Length: 278
Image (cartoon, rainbow, N blue to C red; front, side):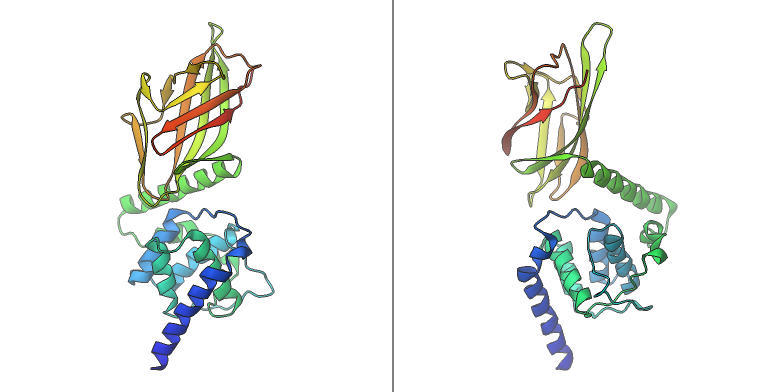
């Protein structure tokens, strides 16, 4: 009976956290690497132990995704977590609660002393490699490391980007590169990170120049793309997924004009201002 009561109290705390602590993140949309969600799922299912899950939490703290005030954080040498907290991790891994809810809950649990972890971040220097140790074959470990490296590149790109939300997709406009050609034209490449904010998959479609939901506009005419990084003319984004996406245009650009990248999809219509450098 005591264990059952403790379990129910844990659920109540999680629910209270979801409804009342979200303001501590200042309303910002958090971006947590997908491998941490996998870690939470494996921990919830019992595939990994508490210490491996804690390393994921320490990663969030180390990379300032989760902020724990030093005066409140518990610092111990053992990573022991009450088992009922796995319920919260399971909800997050299955998409029942958002990234913000998950981080807010962990912040509350740590600050309240309910969850205690080793906050010595210097001891987690090999965190990335540790996250891939659960895999047994070299190929699996290499895939894991590549995914973590890819996630890090996306996060770095997003940090210096400008955000535009169009329908179900967030377009992070990272930058654009202009290269002059011998014929006087300009080769313009636009770099994006695209993120599906929906709870179901969304497809970005551009089959060919005369059948494409994307173009560049100077306010008077539309300029079709020259190349892009879509494979087979489309990119299907699973729910809550981020990908790099580049578009290249080749034209006689007038750098005194204002250009916009146009999106004309069934799931959203909008435009993104684009810089063209001389």
